[in-house]
Structure formats: C-alpha cells, structure tokens
Image (cartoon, rainbow, N blue to C red; front, side, top):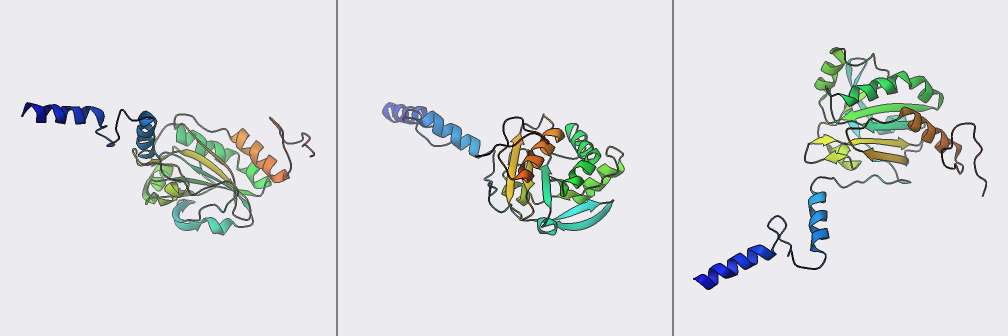
Length: 217
C-alpha cells in the first residue's frame, strides 16, 4: 500500500495537473506557457496582404438599427476598430475622438467602423445615455463574437474584444493591424499617418508624415 501511495505522489509531482505535460521534460515550461496563452487568445484569420475577414453585423446608425457588411465599403478604405465594451471609460474617448476626426478620414476616402461584442440594444442605450457625441459612423454589434474571433481580437476569458485596429484597402485587403493593452487608448494621429502612408503605395521611412519625401529603391 505504501508503495502504491508513493507511486501516486511521484506521478502527481512530475505531471502538470492543468495540462498533463511532464514538468521535468525539456522545454516543458515553455510548452505549458503556450498552452495557457492559447486558452486566452483566439486564432486569427486576419493576415496582412490577404482579404480581410468579411462580416455582416447588426449596427446602430443614427440611432436606428441596420445590417452592415464589410463588402458594402468596397472601393473605399476602411478603418475598423474593436473596443472592449459599452459603458466603459477609455472606449468613449476613442469613439468620440474618431468622430471628431471624421472629416480627416473622409478626405482620405475612408470609412470608420467601430465594433464590440455588446448587443445593438446596448449600443443604442449607450448612445442615448449622452456618453457619446452624435456619431457619424456606425457602432457594430458582434454579439456572436465570431467577427472578433476572425480578426484575432477575442479575449476568450473576458468574453470581450481586445483593442484592435485594422486598415483595409478599397479591394478589401488588410494592410495594417494593431492590437494592444485594453488600458491604453489609440492614437488617431498615428492612424491617419499610417493610412496616408499606405495610400502613397511608396516606401515611407521612420516617422514619415504627409508632405515628407518617400524613399526611392
């Protein structure tokens, strides 16, 4: 009986209980970390230079419900940004900021779309609460979370979208993506800088901005 108990304790000490990976095997720590990380991050189908994942989602436009598809914007540039949630703190600063800068995006033949996993009813209630300005772009509802998953921004632990931003060209091809910590708001100035640089279709050096010279191969 003592021998059996010893064997059970020995087995438990060398097997990672969460993953079933031997703790004493070479590289096991790295493997365990990868397993844990994969449980909190979704697999992205979004890759630079490939067609952006298409979607058709419920949206709030001028306080009315509407269906919107990415394909509706073919022929225009699109700035698609995901945010963690309605009735939060950083998110309204971003949404209002993009709204104030809409004329700058319009001059660049660009439409702005904002997405979270909240319902369309939540979006409408948030708008009517007075927390947001009168918006000139849609708030999209990815209630199934499939679009956030397709773009690799779904936090499966929190059940919300990460703070991810994507620039899609008029042919529907993904040209830029940025995903970062939810606590930090994005820079509209940087978004416009990258968008303008992409539209030159030329080589743009460090800190390039509109009016600067591009590089010639």
